[in-house]
Image 1: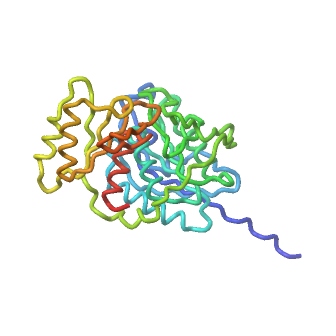
Image 2 (image 1 turned 90 degrees about the vertical axis):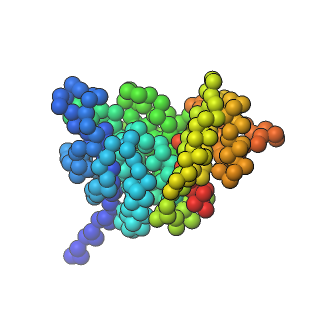
Image 3 (image 1 turned 45 degrees about the vertical axis):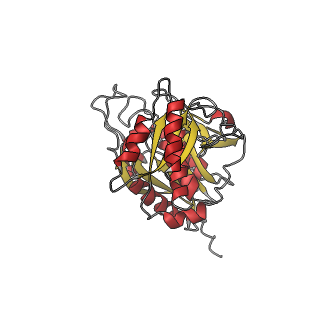
Length: 320
């Protein structure tokens, strides 16, 4: 009698970067006075059952509070994603991450990867030591998306909702359902381990394959300046005068409404643009996009938030 064929190996790789999901507090009742990035990713997987037919692999890429996320970690994370995505038996990746800068990391990975497999970021609003932590369920839901047939692209899973890495925004400081996708809405939901998709998976970034070539380059300095009542151009002027070893090469203007700027800030920004600094306007509004006008003298970032526009401009300055 012939031996039965061995089942095909299907691996989901979980890359840990720290964050609240890996946080510890002195008391289980404390959901805010914790230290992030204390629990290793292998320990986070303890007691979490993998999707049927899936083998889990854990790798610690970093262990930080995501408010302190750095370009070096982004570069290393992207490189590890490239490595694991190339393995034929790896069906998808899960990345554990802090919530504070999750939307920036997600947009960065979307911009530099063109994955035909799912890359799923997940997080928690309560530390691992909480009386009722949300991390384990978020992690299990992210695994379901990473192992789902037909899934691809960079997404974020939190509180049972699947968001695109392009549209994701943190919109609440405390509640468990802290993220939204703006006008676009979520991609879908994870319900009892099953993925229910309501719109298409994220479109791949057109220039992503070229972006991988610059991951080891020195990142250009791009700063964000907000427009507000009584704003002036003093911050822009100070940034231009600072110079030094790392002069400012780009400015993101967090603009009001449909990309409008206080006249004093606009004057300073136009001067900076004339001096060779790349300037981009992004709206402060949580929803909508900037609709350009024929007489605009400063470029706009469309629907990108200021922090995402900063990532986009840095990659542009790197030649992507």
